[in-house]
Image (cartoon, rainbow, N blue to C red; front, top):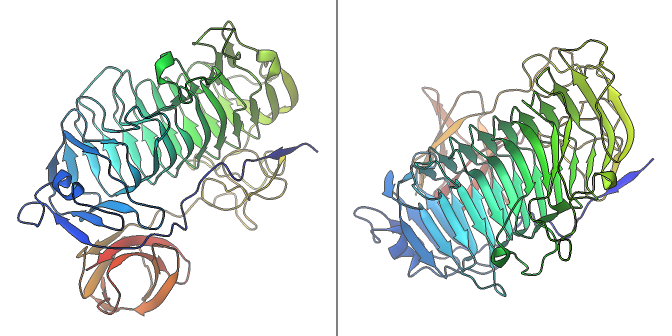
Length: 496
């Protein structure tokens, strides 16, 4: 059986970053620093810019904000999910930033890009090591080529647990130009214009995994594109995009969920693609110069579940100046809901084990397989680091098709448990925190520091549906809370 080899050294997953904490820089009305830019002007590695204002005016510019591998600079919302940066051309434009973490903000109403990070035109020293998590990017006040999150010349970055919704008609949720070694995971994308995610201008070595897309633009994933030659990173790149892994995502709607555009060595695997409105995939070449650029080709599409209806007559749209004969379509399950007896898709390139049949998804679950699904155990095996499904569980050695791996025991009516929603306050806290939840979280919580080290287990007291935990003996810094019994993530807080 063919085995698919994943890059293991190229993708930087910042789960165990060595971050040492220095000062807390209180920011907002009546605080030590009136604005984020004022705090950023004095911040050094290890500092945390803690933003107390609920509404912050956009239009900020921050240059040369640089921490280090051992001491990141973090910009945190004191009320995550409620602290909103409103308006401005960009909420914040970061230029030449390194080792910076942005956490907990709502970005809304910008007229240019929601947030913009760039390399300041310094090709040899790109902005790098950027973490953006637990943020909401929404309701952009623009209709053209404007993006909710714009990344230009960024290396080694991680975007996780973010929401992207209501973008510009001509823009993207995340637009990457000349970006490398990045991961986009556990995010949601909805009601976007041109794309949910675009990677172009020499972007390479990216992982896009465990995201959910719903009407995420004409091309939900635009893997490549068209870029002015001066914007390529590296400047002499021979492709728009290369070496991208797209694994365990669910994409509903869009004219085409997948577009390979001037790209090479891109692998789209173990995704569940539901009811696109025109095509399943596109193979295009928008930057045409055969003396420099390789034609779009040598890409793969495997281990996917694809469900289409009468709106799709051509499964793969092929444009000129491409190399469709070099594509591989392997071990996919195709189902057309509107046509009994459908014999399957018309595909270019190498074709093997493209089955036709109902994947038997659990009703209303998007991606969960019934125990009799023909998708179970039909995938090509991976070699290298364990691959996780959309719920973060490892795929089996011979994986199922689609975004979800069958569990050891599951009934054909079982669906995933709803997310646990937890409010933690006050945050930051000096002596005591309170937990309010939409479900039972247990009397005990386990606390981990930013390096992923276990700190201690706390037992709380319950009063009128709230849980109270004493935290006064903890050292100052940020901590992550987990349910001790099931190890469910509950949230994070800052100890002052």
